[in-house]
Image 1 (cartoon, rainbow, N blue to C red):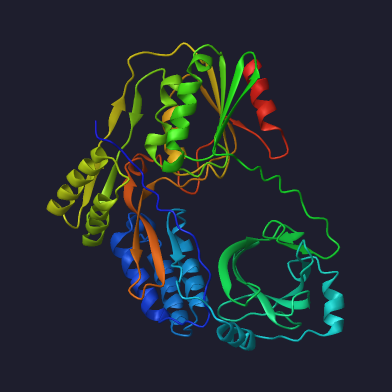
Image 2 (tube, one colour):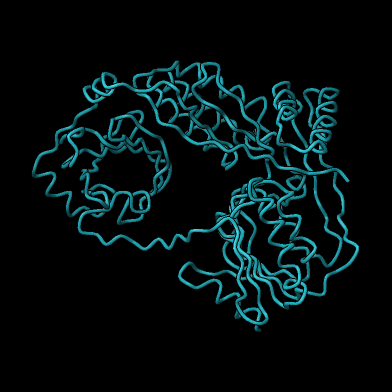
Amino acid sequence: MTKPILFIILFSLGKLSYGQECDCNKDFQFLKNQIENNYSGFKDKVTPSTKRVYDSLTNHFIHLSKLTTKRNYCLGLQKQWITFFKDGHLQIGENKSETKVDSLQIKKMIQETETIKISSKKLGKLKASKGIEGIYYTVDSTYTIAVIKNKTSFRDYVGVIVNSKTKLWTPNQVKLELKELSKDKFIAYTYYQDHSGHITEYSFDGTSLNNGTWVKYNATPKDNNRQQFAPIQTKKLTDKTFYIQIGSFDPWNSQAIDSVFKLNETILKSTPNLILDLRGNGGGVDDAFKPIEPYLYTKPIVNIGVDVIASKDNINSWKALLDYPELDQSIKDWVKTITDKMELNEGELVNVVVDDEITFESIEPFPKKVVILIDGESKSTTEQFLLRAIQSEKVTLIGQNSGGVLDYSNVRDAIYPDGIFTLYYPTTRSRRIDMGEGIDSIGIKPNIYLSGNKDWIIEAINHLKN
């Protein structure tokens, strides 16, 4: 049996140093070339029926890339462009600069910060605004800003300082810029205390921006009910029900998962019900969920494989995995086999994981029933696990649709020639797509849907009782 794996390269967005500039058009052309030649979803997303829209959008962003050398805007417009593909695995990160910002650079950034004067009359009206425009404050009251419509090629709204408890920010300076992606979703250019910045995504919930980072004047912040999940935890809920919550299938959590299942083997093999809580689990590697599967198994598990685009860049990026010291030799041997096959079939789609059936020697009598809790943050490798788990007669999915980020996987990275940004893109394509069983942007539907205002664990216990 061929060993399927899913590598997700983790990255963080570093601080932007706005004293630096970039050749935005050259960076955008690099991104475009990488996507068109190496991204495994390109031909599915750019079809005869969508090509006109794609070409028009791409030409628009090529035009914008010629209008700026500011690296924050450059990164922002690239992030906007890749939303066309609707692929959560397709991302762009900024490489952190090792250069320290000195006091003269900070002074220069402060002097170059844009200012917009807002009249007292306008500020008064903004206090009663019902939409995204309005007066906002930080929870610690360090800053108060006025968000107003102020459209340019790179933004739709700005947040202007009204009051600041730090001397580094003064009234009328632009603290925040928002570019609308869709209804109530934005690319956000946020500026730190020293006026350097960060690019992220914001949402507007009617009372706040970014889940309470900025709270609207005279509004009661909504309880977003965002549960924090531990890497792994267990609890005996009742005499008949054992609970295991797993926050990540990332490699760093694999050993802990294995240890927990070994430590609780006696309980698992004698308790009728199991609740497996995978809410917020954004994925990781397939090996991490292997200790769980024997307890779910009731019949052979059908596994649909993937193909890889054997471009020269992809061959090199897969070969780079051979230099990872943390990878087992068995995985390296598998990667070597794959890259040899890719080199023999350069330019084609190459089968790297065959369709197969997974069987276990026996069926564990306990647990008899398994509830798996899922939500929109259950993604990637977690969804690979779910596709296998739902083939079991023991399993019921409860919650909300999973994230829908799996059809295009095995993420690799490509550093831009100027070294400022890194593209993270999928190289493989699931053959489920050709079977009409793709899940991207849809997710895996639960057997029982739950709204966010219910206690999901209690609902799971009640289901198991019935």
